[in-house]
Amino acid sequence: MKRLGITLLAMCSGLWLMAQTAVGPVLGPVSMRTAKLWAATESKTAIATVQVWAKGKPQQKQVVRTLPTDKNAPYHFQQFEVVNLEPATTYEYEVTLKDGPTHQPPVVMGKGSFTTQALFQWRSNAPDFSFITGSCAYFNEPRFDRPGKPYGGDSSIFETMAKEQAAFMMWLGDNWYTRDVDYSNEWGMWYRAYRDRSSPSLKQLWANMPHLAIWDDHDYGPNDYGKSFQFKQTSREVFRHMWMNPTYGENNEGIYGKYTYADVDFFMMDDRWWRDFDELPDSLNGKPNAHKRMYGKQQLEWLKNELRYSKNNPHISFRVIVTGSQVLNPGSPFDKLLDFPVEYNELMEFIKTEKIPGILFLTGDRHHTEIIKVQHDGLYPMYDITCSPLTSGTHAFGGKEANNPWRILGIDKLQNYGRISISGPRSKRVMKVEFLGIKGEALGQWQVGEQELRF
Image (cartoon, rainbow, N blue to C red; front, side, top):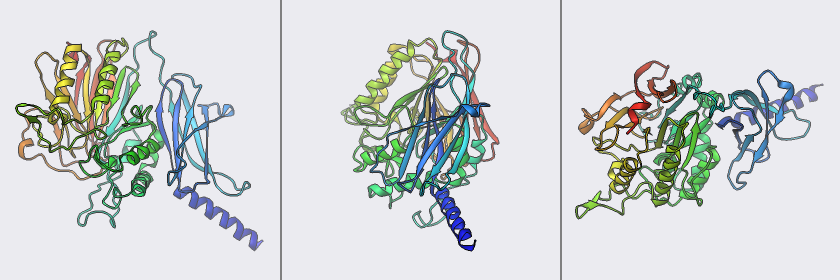
């Protein structure tokens, strides 16, 4: 009996240890008839299993197929795609993990639910919905961090965010911060992403809503880096394994892509893969420097063509260009698309010439939150909604930006996240932007109507 007790104790300890070293489950994007989930372990032999059923009908469970992932990655990643679902239906799921002898029971990694998108096209008005957003998530690891005051702030903000009844979370870059010990080698790139994703403060947020992401410099590589980063291919592989975006660039380059929820198109941009050195001059001989680019020709052509298709979709009200660096801010001394004038001018001229309505920019990076408004001749007002930081260091508005005349709302010195809601009848939809603090306290809000973003 004593030996049996020791054996059972060892089995339970092993199961507990496996559960502690596993990460997930994480919900990925949800469409009308599909959904994605993610799980990962340090053990290469551990196998996660996903079961899904319509809410209230557990007797109709389906086991979900696994999507192929790279076996050469230093961790064991598993991504799952749930298919053949019904629109506008809530489903429940359970993810279990098994590693070791066949007689050993599996461990429940997590449970949750998701709701598929509604099939409203040609049938009804678009459904009202909200999503949350933010950038700059730093998780302290003192032995590798810079000396002094910890840079990472109060991570309980993620527990607050997990309580939101949001359709999804859009991560705006710097979703983890590689350190000097990380970006000098490939293993370190994998380590940082896996280690930071496993933070206990994130567990409920991962399971409670779908997640999509872009990157910026710190989860791409070193500070301010662009196309010359020697491990950029590894960065792309890490990103593809950690997130479940619908697509990742074209021709095995970049991580850009598009996601549509209800009547909003999201164009998720890559501001690092093709990016030239920020300190290159903006102009040469009085003309924009054609050799200074952020998005690159391939990606910019993709964006323009997607905007053309979006313009001709009668069911789309807003077109949100999601990008790591700010776009419009004339008062900022730091990197922004405006400092890459060939591409900036090309994009603005394209929007004007093609008369693309409903465009806003959603950005991160700056360690403060603000809304910038810029008016160009022949264009409706252009808005740049910047939301930062989630947990990384904050700062106060100062210097050229202390009294930025283009800022119509500003929040500094505070951790925060954004809640963006879309509501209203057809052709009169309204986007409401709310910024909230660590405990969900209101910090500021602004809204814009669909009709204000037309020619």
